[in-house]
Image (spheres, rainbow, N blue to C red):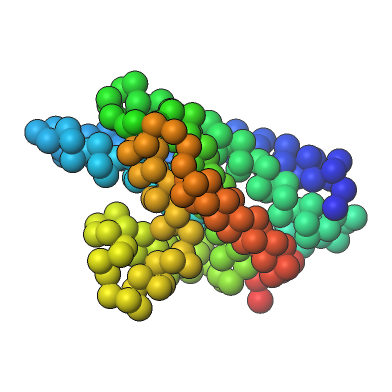
Length: 245
């Protein structure tokens, strides 16, 4: 991997994003609007918002980053841009890491906005440090970016990229412990949830919600989410194709 080529790829992606205000709005504003809507839903019961808001603080950005990244990467391939780039001295790792850096920078802004809105705008009540919430939210957005890069290699059209969302995101959403504690699920479902990274993202948020100090479980959750993102990025580089057949 060449650092100069990787950074050049990241700059190109950021320039493209800068010329697409609708994508910027989807990435930065939609998670905030969804959290605001959720707060209004639980307006009569703020404690219910506290219990579910922290979990969704990480889930909403993950979903939006997954959707935008998968479609943007697929568009590069179907338009022939990816094939032209890889015909130059640009390795797959340069391309994937460049994309990850570009969308990762957007993820930092996104995570900061949703965390700040939740804490200071929506009065989310939690025991831990707001910086810990930001760490988990940022890792979730980076995980969504990595998953989007990975699944784009298996889609032949933007419509197919969207169809991967029910297959990749929805099972994690159902089994992550958001709707019911994971240890009360059927054993087979609990075992499945134990290997899904979103489960640890939700667990990490709940650790910050309940504990003032950094716990061993929180460190485990952070390591699992970060490690999952890194693993998916490696798989994304390995499965990257020049063009769609």
